[in-house]
Image 1 (cartoon, helix red, strand yellow):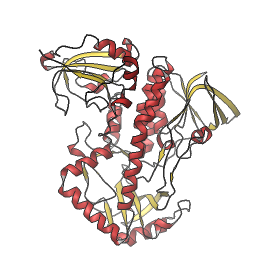
Image 2 (cartoon, rainbow, N blue to C red):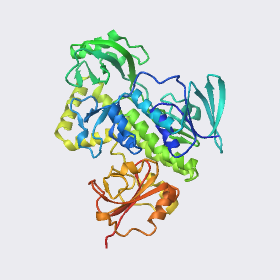
Image 3 (cartoon, rainbow, N blue to C red):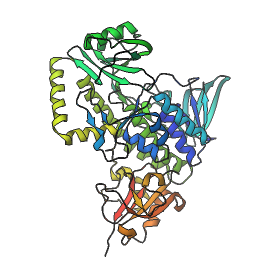
Image 4 (tube, rainbow, N blue to C red):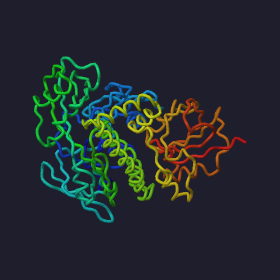
Amino acid sequence: MNDVVVVGAGPVGLLLAAELRLVGVDVTVIERAAARSPHSKALTLHPRSLEVLAMRGLAEPFVRAGVPVPTGHYGGLPVRLDFSVLDTRFPYTLVLPQLRTERLLEERLRALGGEIRRRHRALEVRQDADGAEVDVAGPDGTYTLRTAWVVGCDGAGSAVRTSAGIDFPGTRATTTGILGDVVLDAPPSVPSVDNEYGGFLIVPLADGHHRVAGSTRESRTIPADRPLTFEELRGHVRQVAGTDFGMRAPRWLSRFGNAARQAARYRDGRVLLAGDAAHMHMPMGGQGLNVGLQDAFNLGWKLAAVCQGRAPDGLLDTYHAERHPVGAALLENTQAQTVLGATYTPDARALRSVFGRLLAAHPAVNRQFAGELSALDVAYPADGADGAADRLTGTRPADRLTGTRAPDLGLDGAPEPSLYPLLADGRFVLLRLGPDGDTGREPADALATAAAIAGGPDRIRAVTARPTTTHDGWAGPRTVLVRPDGHVAWDTALSTK
Protein backbone atom coordinates (compact mmCIF):
# COMPACT_ATOMS: atom_id res chain seq x y z
CA MET A 1 0.00 0.00 0.00
CA ASN A 2 1.23 3.48 -0.85
CA ASP A 3 1.74 5.98 1.94
CA VAL A 4 0.47 8.83 -0.24
CA VAL A 5 -0.96 9.23 -3.72
CA VAL A 6 -0.64 12.75 -5.11
CA VAL A 7 -2.96 13.53 -8.01
CA GLY A 8 -1.46 16.16 -10.31
CA ALA A 9 2.14 16.78 -11.41
CA GLY A 10 2.02 20.56 -11.58
CA PRO A 11 4.27 22.66 -9.34
CA VAL A 12 2.15 22.02 -6.24
CA GLY A 13 2.04 18.24 -6.60
CA LEU A 14 5.73 18.06 -7.47
CA LEU A 15 6.82 20.10 -4.44
CA LEU A 16 4.55 18.16 -2.09
CA ALA A 17 5.81 14.82 -3.36
CA ALA A 18 9.42 16.00 -3.03
CA GLU A 19 8.79 17.07 0.56
CA LEU A 20 7.41 13.63 1.38
CA ARG A 21 10.28 11.80 -0.32
CA LEU A 22 12.83 13.99 1.49
CA VAL A 23 12.01 12.23 4.76
CA GLY A 24 11.42 8.78 3.29
CA VAL A 25 7.66 8.66 2.73
CA ASP A 26 6.52 6.45 -0.18
CA VAL A 27 4.59 8.57 -2.67
CA THR A 28 3.17 8.03 -6.15
CA VAL A 29 2.24 10.97 -8.39
CA ILE A 30 -0.33 10.41 -11.11
CA GLU A 31 -0.83 12.93 -13.91
CA ARG A 32 -3.42 12.78 -16.68
CA ALA A 33 -1.31 14.69 -19.25
CA ALA A 34 1.21 12.80 -21.36
CA ALA A 35 3.73 15.62 -21.15
CA ARG A 36 4.27 18.96 -19.46
CA SER A 37 2.37 21.83 -21.10
CA PRO A 38 4.61 24.09 -23.21
CA HIS A 39 2.43 27.06 -22.19
CA SER A 40 3.19 28.71 -18.86
CA LYS A 41 0.08 29.97 -17.10
CA ALA A 42 2.16 31.43 -14.26
CA LEU A 43 5.21 33.61 -14.80
CA THR A 44 6.48 34.63 -11.37
CA LEU A 45 7.84 33.37 -8.08
CA HIS A 46 7.30 35.67 -5.13
CA PRO A 47 9.68 36.27 -2.20
CA ARG A 48 8.10 33.74 0.14
CA SER A 49 8.18 31.01 -2.51
CA LEU A 50 11.89 31.68 -3.01
CA GLU A 51 12.38 31.42 0.76
CA VAL A 52 10.56 28.08 0.70
CA LEU A 53 12.99 26.84 -1.94
CA ALA A 54 15.94 28.26 -0.03
CA MET A 55 14.98 26.22 3.03
CA ARG A 56 15.72 23.10 1.02
CA GLY A 57 18.82 24.46 -0.72
CA LEU A 58 16.96 24.79 -4.03
CA ALA A 59 16.68 28.54 -4.63
CA GLU A 60 19.90 29.07 -6.59
CA PRO A 61 18.94 27.33 -9.87
CA PHE A 62 15.57 29.10 -9.88
CA VAL A 63 17.14 32.51 -9.33
CA ARG A 64 19.79 31.77 -11.95
CA ALA A 65 17.12 30.90 -14.52
CA GLY A 66 14.82 33.85 -13.78
CA VAL A 67 14.83 37.64 -13.97
CA PRO A 68 14.49 39.52 -10.65
CA VAL A 69 12.17 42.54 -10.65
CA PRO A 70 12.14 44.64 -7.44
CA THR A 71 8.49 45.59 -7.79
CA GLY A 72 5.06 44.03 -8.17
CA HIS A 73 1.72 45.34 -9.32
CA TYR A 74 -1.62 45.63 -7.59
CA GLY A 75 -4.58 45.57 -9.95
CA GLY A 76 -2.36 46.71 -12.81
CA LEU A 77 -1.91 50.15 -11.24
CA PRO A 78 0.99 52.16 -12.67
CA VAL A 79 2.24 52.86 -9.12
CA ARG A 80 4.21 49.71 -8.33
CA LEU A 81 4.52 47.86 -5.04
CA ASP A 82 8.07 48.13 -3.70
CA PHE A 83 9.43 44.69 -2.82
CA SER A 84 12.94 46.04 -2.23
CA VAL A 85 12.02 47.17 1.32
CA LEU A 86 10.86 43.71 2.43
CA ASP A 87 12.78 41.86 5.14
CA THR A 88 14.02 38.95 3.04
CA ARG A 89 17.03 37.77 1.09
CA PHE A 90 14.77 37.78 -1.96
CA PRO A 91 13.29 41.30 -2.15
CA TYR A 92 11.89 40.93 -5.64
CA THR A 93 9.50 39.13 -7.94
CA LEU A 94 11.33 36.51 -9.98
CA VAL A 95 10.04 36.33 -13.57
CA LEU A 96 10.28 32.62 -14.36
CA PRO A 97 7.82 30.76 -16.61
CA GLN A 98 5.94 27.90 -14.98
CA LEU A 99 7.42 25.48 -17.51
CA ARG A 100 10.90 26.07 -16.07
CA THR A 101 9.63 25.92 -12.49
CA GLU A 102 8.04 22.52 -13.16
CA ARG A 103 11.20 21.16 -14.78
CA LEU A 104 13.33 22.12 -11.78
CA LEU A 105 10.83 20.68 -9.29
CA GLU A 106 10.56 17.45 -11.26
CA GLU A 107 14.36 17.14 -11.23
CA ARG A 108 14.22 17.50 -7.45
CA LEU A 109 11.53 14.83 -7.08
CA ARG A 110 13.28 12.34 -9.33
CA ALA A 111 16.57 12.88 -7.50
CA LEU A 112 14.73 11.84 -4.32
CA GLY A 113 13.36 8.68 -5.95
CA GLY A 114 9.85 9.94 -6.61
CA GLU A 115 7.61 8.27 -9.19
CA ILE A 116 5.45 10.11 -11.73
CA ARG A 117 2.91 8.17 -13.77
CA ARG A 118 1.95 10.26 -16.80
CA ARG A 119 -1.18 9.50 -18.85
CA HIS A 120 -2.80 8.16 -15.67
CA ARG A 121 -6.08 9.86 -14.77
CA ALA A 122 -7.82 9.68 -11.39
CA LEU A 123 -11.41 8.55 -11.88
CA GLU A 124 -12.76 8.19 -8.36
CA VAL A 125 -11.58 8.31 -4.77
CA ARG A 126 -13.05 6.26 -1.95
CA GLN A 127 -11.99 6.12 1.68
CA ASP A 128 -12.54 4.06 4.79
CA ALA A 129 -11.17 4.00 8.32
CA ASP A 130 -7.90 2.34 7.27
CA GLY A 131 -7.07 4.09 4.03
CA ALA A 132 -8.29 5.20 0.62
CA GLU A 133 -8.55 3.86 -2.90
CA VAL A 134 -7.98 5.72 -6.16
CA ASP A 135 -9.41 4.29 -9.37
CA VAL A 136 -7.04 5.20 -12.19
CA ALA A 137 -7.32 5.03 -15.98
CA GLY A 138 -3.91 4.40 -17.54
CA PRO A 139 -2.55 3.50 -20.98
CA ASP A 140 -3.04 -0.20 -20.23
CA GLY A 141 -6.50 0.07 -18.71
CA THR A 142 -7.98 0.88 -15.33
CA TYR A 143 -6.60 -0.17 -11.96
CA THR A 144 -6.93 0.76 -8.28
CA LEU A 145 -4.27 2.19 -5.97
CA ARG A 146 -4.64 1.47 -2.28
CA THR A 147 -3.11 4.22 -0.16
CA ALA A 148 -3.14 5.72 3.31
CA TRP A 149 -3.69 9.31 2.08
CA VAL A 150 -4.74 11.04 -1.14
CA VAL A 151 -3.86 14.66 -1.97
CA GLY A 152 -5.64 16.43 -4.81
CA CYS A 153 -3.28 18.83 -6.57
CA ASP A 154 -5.25 18.46 -9.79
CA GLY A 155 -6.43 21.99 -10.45
CA ALA A 156 -9.65 23.93 -10.31
CA GLY A 157 -11.62 21.09 -11.91
CA SER A 158 -10.24 18.64 -9.33
CA ALA A 159 -11.52 15.09 -9.73
CA VAL A 160 -10.31 14.36 -6.20
CA ARG A 161 -12.33 17.20 -4.69
CA THR A 162 -15.45 16.30 -6.68
CA SER A 163 -15.16 12.59 -5.92
CA ALA A 164 -14.71 13.28 -2.19
CA GLY A 165 -17.85 15.43 -2.17
CA ILE A 166 -16.06 18.55 -0.93
CA ASP A 167 -18.07 21.69 -1.72
CA PHE A 168 -16.44 24.42 -3.81
CA PRO A 169 -18.56 27.50 -3.12
CA GLY A 170 -17.92 30.92 -4.59
CA THR A 171 -18.82 33.18 -7.48
CA ARG A 172 -19.03 32.48 -11.21
CA ALA A 173 -17.02 34.37 -13.81
CA THR A 174 -18.40 37.81 -14.63
CA THR A 175 -15.29 39.24 -16.32
CA THR A 176 -12.99 37.71 -18.91
CA GLY A 177 -9.37 38.59 -19.60
CA ILE A 178 -7.22 37.76 -22.62
CA LEU A 179 -3.55 36.95 -23.00
CA GLY A 180 -1.05 36.22 -25.70
CA ASP A 181 2.62 35.22 -25.74
CA VAL A 182 3.92 37.10 -28.77
CA VAL A 183 6.95 38.81 -30.24
CA LEU A 184 6.87 42.62 -30.02
CA ASP A 185 9.13 44.48 -32.45
CA ALA A 186 8.54 47.79 -30.64
CA PRO A 187 7.73 46.98 -26.99
CA PRO A 188 6.63 49.81 -24.69
CA SER A 189 9.00 51.38 -22.16
CA VAL A 190 6.47 50.92 -19.33
CA PRO A 191 4.99 47.62 -18.10
CA SER A 192 1.34 48.64 -18.43
CA VAL A 193 -1.02 50.73 -20.53
CA ASP A 194 -4.56 51.64 -19.54
CA ASN A 195 -7.29 54.16 -20.22
CA GLU A 196 -11.06 54.30 -20.37
CA TYR A 197 -11.09 51.64 -23.10
CA GLY A 198 -9.17 48.96 -21.19
CA GLY A 199 -5.80 47.97 -19.82
CA PHE A 200 -2.90 45.60 -20.53
CA LEU A 201 0.18 44.39 -18.70
CA ILE A 202 3.17 43.68 -20.91
CA VAL A 203 5.84 41.40 -19.43
CA PRO A 204 9.10 40.52 -21.22
CA LEU A 205 9.93 36.81 -21.24
CA ALA A 206 13.44 35.40 -21.34
CA ASP A 207 13.26 34.03 -24.89
CA GLY A 208 12.41 37.21 -26.79
CA HIS A 209 8.64 36.93 -26.41
CA HIS A 210 6.34 39.14 -24.34
CA ARG A 211 3.22 38.23 -22.40
CA VAL A 212 0.42 40.66 -23.19
CA ALA A 213 -2.51 40.26 -20.76
CA GLY A 214 -5.52 42.37 -19.93
CA SER A 215 -8.95 43.27 -21.24
CA THR A 216 -11.11 45.94 -22.83
CA ARG A 217 -14.69 46.96 -22.23
CA GLU A 218 -15.69 44.68 -25.13
CA SER A 219 -13.42 41.69 -24.49
CA ARG A 220 -14.37 41.36 -20.82
CA THR A 221 -17.90 40.25 -21.77
CA ILE A 222 -16.86 37.45 -24.16
CA PRO A 223 -17.15 33.94 -22.64
CA ALA A 224 -13.85 32.43 -21.54
CA ASP A 225 -14.44 29.26 -23.57
CA ARG A 226 -14.53 31.11 -26.91
CA PRO A 227 -11.16 30.75 -28.73
CA LEU A 228 -9.09 33.94 -28.88
CA THR A 229 -7.69 34.85 -32.30
CA PHE A 230 -4.47 36.74 -32.96
CA GLU A 231 -6.29 39.47 -34.87
CA GLU A 232 -8.68 39.92 -31.97
CA LEU A 233 -5.79 40.34 -29.51
CA ARG A 234 -4.08 42.86 -31.81
CA GLY A 235 -7.30 44.80 -32.20
CA HIS A 236 -7.94 45.08 -28.48
CA VAL A 237 -4.37 46.18 -27.77
CA ARG A 238 -4.54 48.82 -30.51
CA GLN A 239 -7.80 50.13 -29.07
CA VAL A 240 -6.12 50.80 -25.73
CA ALA A 241 -2.54 51.67 -26.72
CA GLY A 242 -3.02 53.10 -30.20
CA THR A 243 -0.49 50.55 -31.49
CA ASP A 244 0.08 46.80 -31.39
CA PHE A 245 3.81 47.31 -30.64
CA GLY A 246 4.77 45.36 -33.75
CA MET A 247 3.02 42.25 -32.50
CA ARG A 248 3.70 39.01 -34.39
CA ALA A 249 4.51 35.31 -34.06
CA PRO A 250 1.89 34.29 -31.47
CA ARG A 251 2.65 30.99 -29.76
CA TRP A 252 -0.16 30.94 -27.20
CA LEU A 253 -3.50 32.73 -27.01
CA SER A 254 -6.02 32.26 -24.21
CA ARG A 255 -8.88 33.71 -22.21
CA PHE A 256 -9.35 33.54 -18.44
CA GLY A 257 -12.15 34.46 -16.06
CA ASN A 258 -12.62 35.86 -12.57
CA ALA A 259 -14.56 32.99 -11.00
CA ALA A 260 -13.60 32.88 -7.32
CA ARG A 261 -14.14 29.65 -5.39
CA GLN A 262 -12.63 27.97 -2.34
CA ALA A 263 -12.99 24.44 -1.04
CA ALA A 264 -15.16 24.32 2.07
CA ARG A 265 -12.53 22.17 3.74
CA TYR A 266 -8.97 21.31 2.80
CA ARG A 267 -9.20 17.95 4.59
CA ASP A 268 -11.92 15.35 4.44
CA GLY A 269 -10.77 12.27 6.34
CA ARG A 270 -7.94 10.78 4.29
CA VAL A 271 -8.36 13.21 1.40
CA LEU A 272 -6.58 16.57 1.28
CA LEU A 273 -6.50 19.42 -1.25
CA ALA A 274 -3.80 21.90 -2.23
CA GLY A 275 -3.26 24.61 -4.82
CA ASP A 276 -5.92 25.33 -7.42
CA ALA A 277 -7.90 22.29 -6.26
CA ALA A 278 -8.45 24.23 -3.03
CA HIS A 279 -8.82 27.77 -4.40
CA MET A 280 -9.41 29.38 -7.80
CA HIS A 281 -9.45 33.09 -8.66
CA MET A 282 -8.60 35.75 -11.23
CA PRO A 283 -4.83 35.61 -11.90
CA MET A 284 -4.17 39.08 -10.49
CA GLY A 285 -0.73 39.67 -8.99
CA GLY A 286 0.62 36.27 -10.00
CA GLN A 287 -0.31 34.68 -6.68
CA GLY A 288 -1.95 31.37 -7.56
CA LEU A 289 1.11 29.18 -8.14
CA ASN A 290 2.88 30.80 -5.20
CA VAL A 291 0.09 30.21 -2.69
CA GLY A 292 -0.16 26.64 -3.98
CA LEU A 293 3.55 26.01 -3.36
CA GLN A 294 3.13 27.38 0.15
CA ASP A 295 0.13 25.07 0.70
CA ALA A 296 2.34 22.13 -0.25
CA PHE A 297 5.16 23.26 2.03
CA ASN A 298 2.79 23.57 4.99
CA LEU A 299 1.20 20.18 4.34
CA GLY A 300 4.32 18.20 3.48
CA TRP A 301 5.99 17.93 6.88
CA LYS A 302 2.69 17.37 8.66
CA LEU A 303 1.60 14.56 6.36
CA ALA A 304 5.05 12.98 6.61
CA ALA A 305 4.92 13.08 10.41
CA VAL A 306 1.52 11.36 10.42
CA CYS A 307 2.60 8.74 7.85
CA GLN A 308 5.63 7.86 9.96
CA GLY A 309 3.70 7.69 13.24
CA ARG A 310 5.47 10.69 14.75
CA ALA A 311 2.26 12.69 15.16
CA PRO A 312 -1.47 11.94 15.53
CA ASP A 313 -3.52 12.50 12.41
CA GLY A 314 -5.15 15.46 14.15
CA LEU A 315 -2.05 17.40 13.13
CA LEU A 316 -3.51 17.46 9.61
CA ASP A 317 -6.43 19.53 10.89
CA THR A 318 -3.96 22.38 11.42
CA TYR A 319 -3.34 22.35 7.66
CA HIS A 320 -6.91 23.51 7.07
CA ALA A 321 -6.81 25.84 10.09
CA GLU A 322 -3.69 27.59 8.83
CA ARG A 323 -4.08 27.59 5.06
CA HIS A 324 -7.83 28.08 4.56
CA PRO A 325 -7.69 31.68 5.88
CA VAL A 326 -4.73 32.34 3.56
CA GLY A 327 -6.81 31.11 0.63
CA ALA A 328 -9.75 33.27 1.70
CA ALA A 329 -7.47 36.33 1.82
CA LEU A 330 -6.16 35.41 -1.63
CA LEU A 331 -9.67 35.42 -3.08
CA GLU A 332 -10.46 38.73 -1.40
CA ASN A 333 -7.42 40.56 -2.72
CA THR A 334 -7.73 39.18 -6.26
CA GLN A 335 -11.38 40.22 -6.33
CA ALA A 336 -10.39 43.71 -5.19
CA GLN A 337 -7.67 43.83 -7.84
CA THR A 338 -10.18 42.78 -10.49
CA VAL A 339 -12.31 45.83 -9.71
CA LEU A 340 -9.23 48.05 -9.95
CA GLY A 341 -7.67 46.42 -12.98
CA ALA A 342 -10.48 45.11 -15.16
CA THR A 343 -13.33 47.60 -14.77
CA TYR A 344 -13.40 50.69 -16.99
CA THR A 345 -16.36 52.75 -15.85
CA PRO A 346 -15.75 56.36 -14.73
CA ASP A 347 -16.27 55.27 -11.12
CA ALA A 348 -13.65 52.52 -11.44
CA ARG A 349 -11.22 54.92 -13.11
CA ALA A 350 -11.65 57.32 -10.20
CA LEU A 351 -10.98 54.48 -7.77
CA ARG A 352 -7.77 53.60 -9.64
CA SER A 353 -6.62 57.19 -9.43
CA VAL A 354 -7.30 57.49 -5.70
CA PHE A 355 -5.74 54.12 -4.91
CA GLY A 356 -2.66 54.93 -6.99
CA ARG A 357 -2.11 58.18 -5.08
CA LEU A 358 -2.49 56.30 -1.82
CA LEU A 359 0.24 53.80 -2.75
CA ALA A 360 2.53 56.57 -3.96
CA ALA A 361 2.10 58.88 -0.98
CA HIS A 362 2.12 56.37 1.88
CA PRO A 363 5.09 53.96 2.00
CA ALA A 364 3.51 52.07 4.90
CA VAL A 365 0.44 51.27 2.81
CA ASN A 366 2.63 50.25 -0.10
CA ARG A 367 4.65 48.03 2.26
CA GLN A 368 1.51 46.41 3.66
CA PHE A 369 0.23 45.39 0.23
CA ALA A 370 3.70 44.26 -0.83
CA GLY A 371 3.88 42.08 2.27
CA GLU A 372 0.49 40.55 1.56
CA LEU A 373 1.16 39.94 -2.13
CA SER A 374 4.61 38.44 -1.45
CA ALA A 375 3.19 36.22 1.35
CA LEU A 376 5.93 37.36 3.73
CA ASP A 377 3.29 38.66 6.13
CA VAL A 378 1.54 35.30 6.55
CA ALA A 379 1.44 34.34 10.22
CA TYR A 380 -0.55 31.55 11.83
CA PRO A 381 -2.44 31.97 15.11
CA ALA A 382 -0.80 30.24 18.05
CA ASP A 383 -3.59 27.71 18.48
CA GLY A 384 -3.44 26.80 14.79
CA ALA A 385 0.30 27.01 14.27
CA ASP A 386 1.14 25.12 17.41
CA GLY A 387 -1.80 22.82 17.87
CA ALA A 388 0.62 19.93 18.26
CA ALA A 389 2.32 21.68 21.16
CA ASP A 390 -1.02 22.28 22.84
CA ARG A 391 -1.93 18.60 22.67
CA LEU A 392 1.47 17.21 23.55
CA THR A 393 2.53 19.58 26.31
CA GLY A 394 -0.77 20.80 27.71
CA THR A 395 0.31 24.42 27.29
CA ARG A 396 -0.39 27.14 24.81
CA PRO A 397 2.70 29.23 23.97
CA ALA A 398 1.91 32.91 24.34
CA ASP A 399 5.04 34.51 22.90
CA ARG A 400 4.29 36.57 19.84
CA LEU A 401 6.82 34.77 17.65
CA THR A 402 4.79 31.57 17.73
CA GLY A 403 3.17 31.05 14.33
CA THR A 404 5.15 33.79 12.61
CA ARG A 405 7.51 33.33 9.68
CA ALA A 406 11.12 32.92 10.73
CA PRO A 407 13.48 35.14 8.69
CA ASP A 408 16.73 33.74 7.31
CA LEU A 409 18.46 34.81 10.49
CA GLY A 410 22.23 35.30 10.17
CA LEU A 411 24.03 33.08 12.69
CA ASP A 412 27.55 33.14 14.13
CA GLY A 413 28.77 29.89 15.64
CA ALA A 414 26.30 27.68 13.76
CA PRO A 415 27.20 24.99 11.19
CA GLU A 416 25.65 27.24 8.51
CA PRO A 417 25.85 31.03 8.15
CA SER A 418 22.08 31.47 8.41
CA LEU A 419 18.92 29.66 9.47
CA TYR A 420 17.45 28.42 6.18
CA PRO A 421 20.31 26.05 5.22
CA LEU A 422 19.82 24.36 8.61
CA LEU A 423 16.31 23.33 7.47
CA ALA A 424 17.53 21.57 4.32
CA ASP A 425 16.89 18.03 5.57
CA GLY A 426 13.30 18.77 6.59
CA ARG A 427 13.84 18.57 10.35
CA PHE A 428 12.86 21.08 13.04
CA VAL A 429 15.62 23.45 14.16
CA LEU A 430 15.99 24.32 17.85
CA LEU A 431 17.80 27.66 18.04
CA ARG A 432 19.44 28.78 21.26
CA LEU A 433 20.13 32.43 20.61
CA GLY A 434 22.06 35.01 22.59
CA PRO A 435 24.93 37.51 22.46
CA ASP A 436 28.36 35.87 22.37
CA GLY A 437 26.72 32.47 22.54
CA ASP A 438 25.14 33.22 25.96
CA THR A 439 21.54 32.10 25.56
CA GLY A 440 20.55 32.89 29.12
CA ARG A 441 18.73 30.43 31.34
CA GLU A 442 16.93 27.97 29.13
CA PRO A 443 14.01 26.11 30.70
CA ALA A 444 15.11 22.66 31.82
CA ASP A 445 12.38 20.99 29.76
CA ALA A 446 13.04 22.94 26.54
CA LEU A 447 14.55 20.01 24.66
CA ALA A 448 11.83 17.65 25.86
CA THR A 449 9.14 20.12 24.77
CA ALA A 450 10.78 20.53 21.38
CA ALA A 451 11.09 16.76 20.95
CA ALA A 452 7.41 16.27 21.80
CA ILE A 453 6.39 18.83 19.18
CA ALA A 454 8.77 17.49 16.53
CA GLY A 455 7.92 13.83 17.03
CA GLY A 456 11.18 12.74 18.65
CA PRO A 457 14.68 14.06 19.38
CA ASP A 458 15.94 12.68 16.06
CA ARG A 459 13.64 15.14 14.28
CA ILE A 460 15.44 18.14 15.83
CA ARG A 461 18.64 19.87 14.86
CA ALA A 462 19.82 21.83 17.92
CA VAL A 463 22.03 24.88 17.33
CA THR A 464 23.55 27.44 19.70
CA ALA A 465 24.52 30.67 17.96
CA ARG A 466 24.68 34.46 18.07
CA PRO A 467 22.37 36.33 15.65
CA THR A 468 24.22 38.49 13.14
CA THR A 469 21.16 40.12 11.54
CA THR A 470 18.38 42.19 13.09
CA HIS A 471 14.70 41.39 12.66
CA ASP A 472 11.58 42.63 14.44
CA GLY A 473 10.73 40.52 17.49
CA TRP A 474 13.96 38.53 17.49
CA ALA A 475 16.02 40.63 19.90
CA GLY A 476 17.31 39.28 23.21
CA PRO A 477 18.28 35.79 24.36
CA ARG A 478 15.68 33.20 23.50
CA THR A 479 15.10 29.60 22.53
CA VAL A 480 13.13 29.14 19.30
CA LEU A 481 11.84 25.95 17.69
CA VAL A 482 11.43 26.44 13.94
CA ARG A 483 9.17 24.10 12.01
CA PRO A 484 10.32 22.45 8.79
CA ASP A 485 8.24 25.01 6.85
CA GLY A 486 10.03 27.95 8.45
CA HIS A 487 7.32 29.07 10.88
CA VAL A 488 7.93 29.25 14.62
CA ALA A 489 6.47 26.27 16.47
CA TRP A 490 7.41 27.38 19.97
CA ASP A 491 9.69 29.91 21.61
CA THR A 492 10.51 31.49 24.92
CA ALA A 493 12.39 34.64 25.82
CA LEU A 494 15.07 33.83 28.38
CA SER A 495 16.26 35.50 31.54
CA THR A 496 19.91 36.55 31.62
CA LYS A 497 20.01 36.82 35.43
